[in-house]
Amino acid sequence: MIKTLSNNISFLRTMLYISALVILVVGALTYRSITEVTKSSEMITHTYKVNVELEQVLSYLKDAETGQRGYIITNDSIFLEPYISGRSKINNSFAELKVLAKDNTTLTNSLKDLNLLINKRLLAFQTSYRSLPKNDIDDPAFIQNFKNGRVLMDSIRDQIKGAIAIQNNLLNQRNNEYKSDLMATPLLLFSLLLCSLLLMYAAYNSIYKNIKQLKATNEELEIFKESTNQSEIVSKHGSWTWNVKTNTFTYSDNLYRLLGEQPQSFKPTIENFLTYVHPEDVEQLSKQVEQMKENVELPYIYYRVVHKNGNVKHLKAYGKSLVNDEDETVLLGTTADITDEIISFKVLEERNAELERNNKELSSFNYVASHDLQEPLRKIQTFLSRLEDEEVDKLSPKGIRYIDRIKNAATRMRLLIDDLLQFSRSNKADKVFEDSNINLIFEAAKQDLAEVISAENAIITSDAFPSMKVIPFQIQQLFVNLLGNAIKYKAEGVIPKIEITHQVVEADKEDGITKPKNQFYHKLVFTDNGIGFDNTYAEQIFTLFNRLHNKDEYSGTGIGLSICKKIVENHKGYITAKGEPNKGATFTVFLPID
Image (cartoon, rainbow, N blue to C red; front, side, top):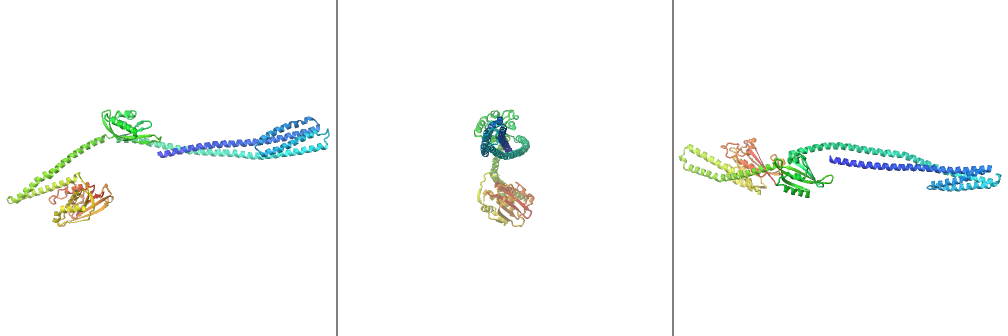
């Protein structure tokens, strides 16, 4: 949205520049057109003036010629007045014509020729009336001179008509140019004004769209502001900004609430803020604020504030600088109430301390189980053995049965203690992972079970295992428990057969791996032909002390598979079970590949 508005502002700015340019062009063209029209008008007026002056010259000559004739006929000198005044008038007209023709070479040359003819004609006038014999108009010299004057007058008339014809042609040309300028100027101005109107419409349309977008943006910003306020309230944090250039702060409403005050209840300054800080934290926080102003950054800092009601709250603050649209550096900060986290952390520390105490007690129990409990158990079994060897003949059948039950109970007690010790060992924190030869560990596990394997004639086959990074003694215990389970729960009259396979698999292709942290895993599958189990109990069999069979039918404490699960979890792996009654069971172990 912000990018769109920025583009629209750029568009409007461009429209403004183009409109200003069009206005300048319109003004320039208008000035040029007016200048051209004025020039055309001046040229037309100039041509008219030239024609008028030429007509005047011809008129003055005609007046002089008429006066000459009147003088010849009447011999009255008053008729010479047009001739006498005509000379000065002709000179004045020629002076005006020279000025008008200064930029016209053709007219200037024509005026020179015309001036020569006029001078000759005026000289002929003068010669005619001065050489005229008294009352003798039939004098041949006079007649000849008079005829010459007429010829000159015809030449002057033709010269003036030629000049006027040239000027008329020029006048027609200038009239056409004037009309063309008068027609082209409005058309051009109309076109430019039309373009201006189109640009104004485009700008108006863009402004209208921008106003709609701004309105929608303002509504979104109001919603976002309210959402932010609610989010700050729910998450117990507030925001603040520091303008580096103006050294001014702004606080969000919820930052005031974190201090136990109403929103905007005091001026947002460092001095006012420090009045709420716990007295023991004021000095440290003041130093951190000075470092913030120096580095324009605020790393995570922790301090306490005290509300007016005496409640102490733990706060955490962080700030990061940025540059705004006015090219000003602003530090944008967040302050969060972490009082609940501090309380939870203290509770967790107390629980960890309690857990540590429990672990120590458990270690003490392990010591008791491995030494103090086993010692009297060994004595019980020893004295039972002596009683059975030395006094069995003196016991009644009932007493013998009691001794057998005591022996069975003591054996189960020893198994239970051993399994508890194994389970305790699997929970110990000192787990050292080593690159191990799994084949050797597997052979060691079979040696631990050698007597049972031999007694049951069990057949065990396995793939070759690669080296793995494991806790060796725990993996050996895992093999012992799984192999021992498969032999223990054999089918009646059937030789136990156990097969172990290995392959490397991808986590996302195996159903038994949930939320994997590695991509590849070692997959170990233990398959037997024993009595199996109902698959409904596939998860239950890994529960501590859980048994699916009566203790009189099969020995065991219900701890073995729990130990297996714990060992696999220690290796960040997975173990699953699948069974079918009277057909056997399958245990699958997934160990991650680092």
